[in-house]
Amino acid sequence: MLDYKLVEAFAAVVSCGGFEKAAQSLHLTQSAVSQRVKQLEEQSGRILLVRSTPPRPTPAGRDMLRHYRQVKRLEDDLASTIGPGSSGFTVLPVGVNADSLVTWFLPAVQDFLEAESVLLDLSVDDQDETHKLLRGGEVLGCVSARPEPFQGCRVEFLGVMDYRLCGTPAYATRWFPNGFTREAAAHAPIMLYNRKDELHVKLFEQAFGETVSGHPTAYVPSSGKFPDFVLTGQVSGMLPDEDCLEHIRAGRMVNLVGDMVLPIPLYWHSWGLDSALLKGFSAALARGARSRLRQP
Image (tube, rainbow, N blue to C red; front, side, top):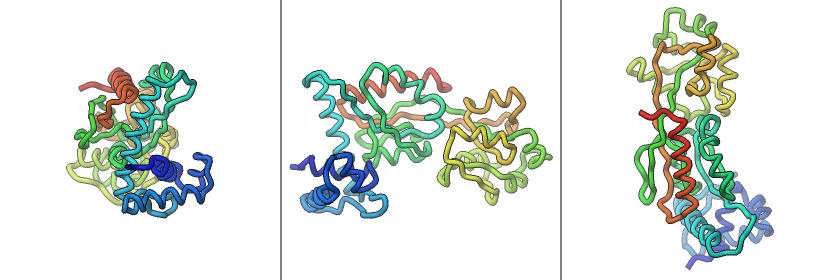
């Protein structure tokens, strides 16, 4: 039988990114948190935590974290049903890709957040990476480009985000004077969200039938700033229609690949828990997303 005070300490170290911050969040000493994690490892017979900076869960630790998140969600649901009235909030850990976060995500769930005492604990990553947060137990649900569900999880189609490779007219004239060719694309500077961002790779494969390498690359880990950087004329960037169509209509940007659009289907994955709150959030998110994303 697990001692959930020990599991809570372990989960706090992972979510807070260290023993000191975990101790502050739990109102314990750092030594007490360390002892609880050590005791949990002794009881389970597994090393659960890699003592790096920040600490990382081992595969066994990810299983433990996933179990804790699920139990905590069910306990919170039970408390809200049979417990006394409270002005407290429930925290939902959710994974979301950066472009969704700065465009449609908040409007999609705003009514739910206003109606329920819920706070979101958002983890942001590329749409091809967020499912790893779910698999590792760090979140209870995620927006992802992955269509297949994990075992024990639900998946629901949300809609499609359309992307275009955009630059200013001056950028297009400088780097693509003879049109969007593979040779020109190999030399034109492009902006990516991070080193896991491969939207441009998919677009190049769609345009040329193969990838393009060697192009100068800038990294800007803020989707909200992508249009601003593109408008400087120094780089091109993959922008969702929500961020670029107005600029294209006004002549401030052009689609460098003519009318080519890269469609990215998005899905909502969540643990298959019998949690009224998680089901309610999932339904609200899906309903809001479908009213804002393109439906094929």
